Image 1 (cartoon, rainbow, N blue to C red):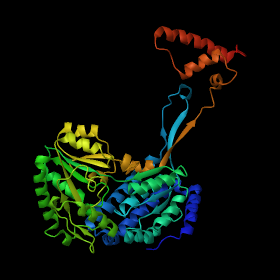
Image 2: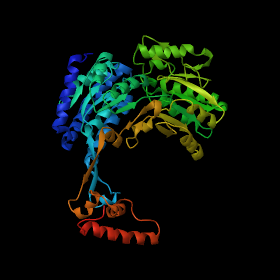
Image 3: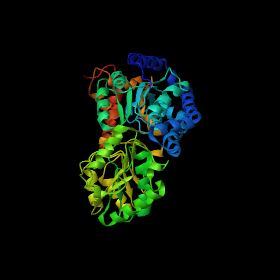
Image 4: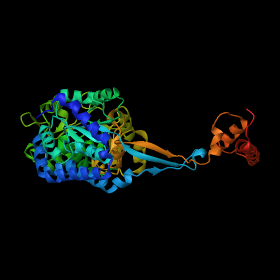
Length: 500
């Protein structure tokens, strides 16, 4: 993979700054044209993207289509349809009585030159979806794709510049050294998707320039199966979310909590579903992914090696040469197991934590960093409300997994340890914009406005009180106050001088 020359990085950012200052990206038609070009890139190179993603992750084209390309196209279409409305200033009603006759508006402005750092696990979707919002909002962009997903990132670097205007969009390729140099530059917003360790580094670097950040991180997103849930549906949908993309998904269900008496049936159903989807040997299935590289493989192998073999009820097989980790179910698992339950697993290993009841499940969630999402399987409204009221997460999805990510009408993001800020749909536009207030004052009524000016006196104070504080509560006091104000107003407006 060809890296960007470190010495050129400051010049790249500076050239983008010049472009932004020229104002071309603020033009709505320019933004629409760039969005259409991004859409054309995805449509033209769809099959090639299937191939490059497969080389990186052994991902089936159906998963690449549904999880990589379709979400971007959906957001592009949303922006093209709604951009005129999103760019319109919004009139707001004045609350301050002295401004009642004036025009007050809020306009969303582009932040400027933004940095987007993408991860390796969804090497098309996660770098390019924020690009959609940044373009729509009128920014210039530096995109830093992951060096780990080298085939896909190299493809983006070679072909995307042929579609987008290089005056306003640039790709920087590289590893740690190049990323450090990029982060040393001054940006107007940084959008990072990745793990919390690197997220903290990004935030520390952003502090140097007081740059706002969006951090899309991860965490241990639980799947909770309530007693009233349809177990078959729960298993089907949990395993879909867990093994999609080889388990390398930030919103994958990290572990399952289910009442003790239902654990055996859950595991038996898991065994049946895994066999139905991947056959006797999942390694031979073209529907099952691989780990991105040896580092990720060894991290998961270390977790498996720490587990009591008697608790590995399904799977557990590995193949280093093929970067293969079998779909694995481990049970029973203690809620505070140091290997399985402290860090995000980010792979196809599913711990099952037996609980006494839903209250215990809530307590376990409360002891951990806030996850990106809580998955809850129940038909009971009171159970749903209990989890909504007593847990904290970026989202709650009831009776399914992953699907909320595809819904652009919902903001996607974390809270606490799982991140800060959100995007998708209108939230992407908002993330890369700032709200600029506009007030247009009337040049008239200067005779009234003179109450603001020195020299001050009691009459001006009383008149100003009416314009700012309003009337007293009772009728009697209102009448007295109005008479006093009328006198004061007359003296302020028509007297040449009043008592100081």
